[in-house]
Image 1 (cartoon, rainbow, N blue to C red):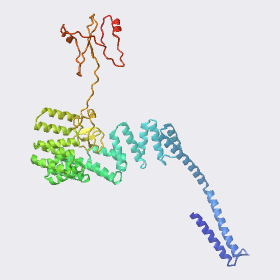
Image 2 (cartoon, helix red, strand yellow; image 1 turned 60 degrees about the horizontal axis):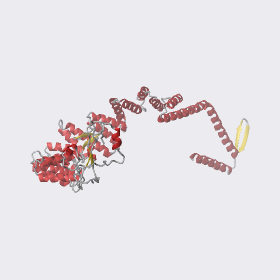
Image 3 (tube, one colour; image 1 turned 120 degrees about the vertical axis):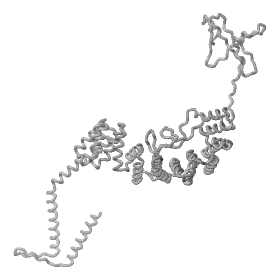
Image 4 (tube, helix red, strand yellow; image 1 turned 60 degrees about the vertical axis):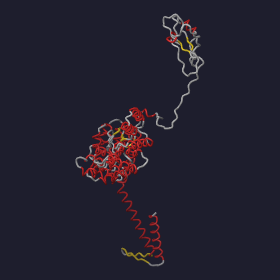
Length: 533
């Protein structure tokens, strides 16, 4: 558009110039070799413009003729490059689709048309084709070759990392991931693998630096970064709690500042403060964490903040926690435990039962069993409560990848994942799938209707194998009771001689799908005259 405007501007300027000359008549005289040439000013101007245009055209023709070999070679080179890129594109699509044969064919074609040092994607296509063909050794060689090229180095490290993962060589995989993370911490695969390696070796400072690099490159959000830093600082405090209490205290307080609701961080920070007799600050940290989410470890530390306190003082501290978080099972259980230690059995029983009403689980029944044994010693009730505890849902615990732990840990013992432990109820036992109705206070006891009693019930007495007599069926007398006692051989022998003879019993009522056997047919078929039914 700009060129068009410039063209019209030049034409307009030339028109104005010629119009200006036309309005001012004049002559131009040129003397050359004794001849005098006289022309008008307008003709002279037109001649000058024509000469300039002719010179420009001649120069363009000469330049085009001079550059024609280069122009022709460039045309064929561009055409060759376009064919190479088309082959490269087709090969990449084939590699993505899993067509190893076509990918290898297009790789060779692209390598002939494009130099590999000019286009690094050819090396990637060669490696992908080798992987599709099952030539993992050749693929690894290609990836190792990429390490020499700064542009392809990260790609080579990624390929070597995946090959090491495929072979199960965790050390090599973490080595390649560490090199990649050092060059580009924004790579998620490299950062996560390196983070697992650092946390597995207990290098908490290195892990913290890596998380800080991830945060600076905006690979992870701010909240996620703070959560990870809190976990790593808590783990560092746990590792230094005995060797360097001051450094452990600094790390724990920083973790608690980042996540005040994180129970492990609050617990270890309060524990270190209690050791230094700073009970007020430690109690405040525990109270803040308790308000966010009650936890039994927080209640244990809070009630035992001062080792020399009496049991009644610990009970009062437990009640203070309960005031902060009312109508919660953990609050009631904390008070119940403290009341049991203080021998206040009525309070302990009341709070334990309240906890069961709010959250029926195993620990509450066990605590109630301890209260019952300490107060009354009634072993029957204790066993009843223990049986309910077995059937009740399990208490929350630290769970990670199917592993249940009583204590929090920074990484999973199975996968090595950071911050894998969660405070939740473990997987229920198989027997707990059927909920018990024993704890329902007003639950109606289900009744099973008795089947209608037949008019006559028959009991068939079996004869010995060698007996020649037919088996005798003794009819049961009709009574108004639900249970009818069968007549056995012993009962028949006890009948007095002058008693009434029992009438032959009718056949037993058979099920609809069991027609049974006719006794007469059975007698004819069996020479031994033995019948089971």
